[in-house]
Amino acid sequence: MAPSHDTHSTLQVERPAESGYPNHLKLGDWHIQNLQVVSLGTRLNVIELGSAQAPRTVLFVHGLRDSAHALLPTVQTLLDAGGADAYRILLLELRGHGQSQRSQAYGMPNFILDAYNVQQQLIDGKFALFGHSLGGHIAAKYAALFAEQISALMLIEGLGPPTRAHEGDASKELAAYRHMLLTRFRLSSDRTLPSLDEVVDKLLKNNPRLDPAAARALAPHLTREQDGKLSWAFDSLASSVFVGTSAAENEKFWRHVEAPTLIVSGSLSYEYWGSELAEAGFSGKFAEGEMEARAAMFKHAQHHWFANSGHMVHYDEPERLGQLIADFLENNYE
Image (tube, rainbow, N blue to C red; front, top):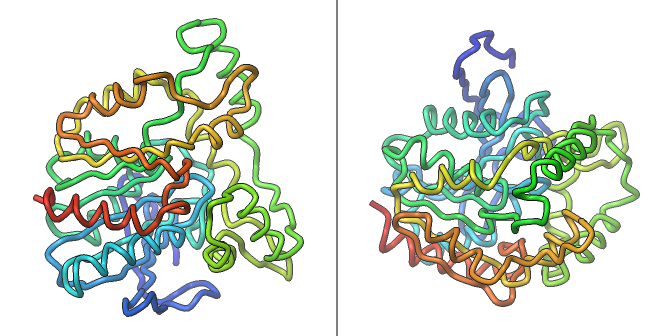
C-alpha cells in the first residue's frame, strides 16, 4: 500500500492481512481481526476483537519491546467479565513492533499521533484508553491533549522510572543525555536468534512469574522470520523515544488529565528498573511515597499495588489485572 504524501495526519485502512499471520484468529470464544492502518506514512497493525456494536470501546497500547498479543490474556478476562456485547477492543501494535512497519521516526509525538489517527478512523465517540509502560506514557499524554475523547484512562506501570541520583544536577543530567544519545540511536541489527525455544527461555528468565505456556504462545509474536532467519519483531531504534524526557515534562501532562484514571504498580518492578537502567548505586526501587505522590497528580485517580507483579503486570497477574479493569470500567466509563 503506497503511503500518502500528505505531511499532516493521514490514515488509510485495509482489512486484508499483509503478512504471514492469518487475518482472523480465535481467542476463546472471541473473534479477532487485524486491521491495517497507515499513520504518517507508516503502516500500523491494529488487532480488533469483541463486538463492533458494543457501547464501550477500549484502545490498548503496549510497551517498548513488547507485543499487543501479550495483553490478550488480560483482554480475555475483561471480555469474559463484561459479556458478549459489552466491549469493542482495539490493540495497537506500536510502530516498529510486531506486524506494524518500522520507521525512522520514534519521537513521542509520532506515537501520540499514531493513536490519534487510529481514533480518527476506527473509533466513533469517546473511548477508554489503556497503556502499559511506554504505552502508559503515550496514553497519559494523549488523555491530557485530547481530554474530550477519553472516557476512562488505565495506566499500568506507566509512571516510571524511579527518580535517579543524576536528576536535579545539570552536569549529571547532560552526561546522562549524552549516554542516551550514543546508545539509543542505533539502527536495528536484526540479530539472528537461534530458535523459538531460546526465545521462550529468555522470556522466562527475564520474567520468572510468566506462565511457561503463555511464554510459548507469545514467542512467535515477539519475533519474525525472514529469509529463513529468526529475529526480534521490534526495532531497537524505538528506544530512542525516551531520550530527553524528564519528570517535570511528564508531570505537566499528568496534572491535566480529566478522565477517571486507574493506576496499577507492580511491587516487584525494581527487578526491571534495576536491570534496565543499570546505574551504579541504583536499586531500581521507588523512594518511599514516590509513586503515591505521582498518582496524586491525577485529578481523579485510584492507585493499586500488585504485590506479586513486577513491571510486566500483564505477564505476572493477567487475570487479576483484567478483572480490576472490568470493575473500573463498569463504574467509571462515562
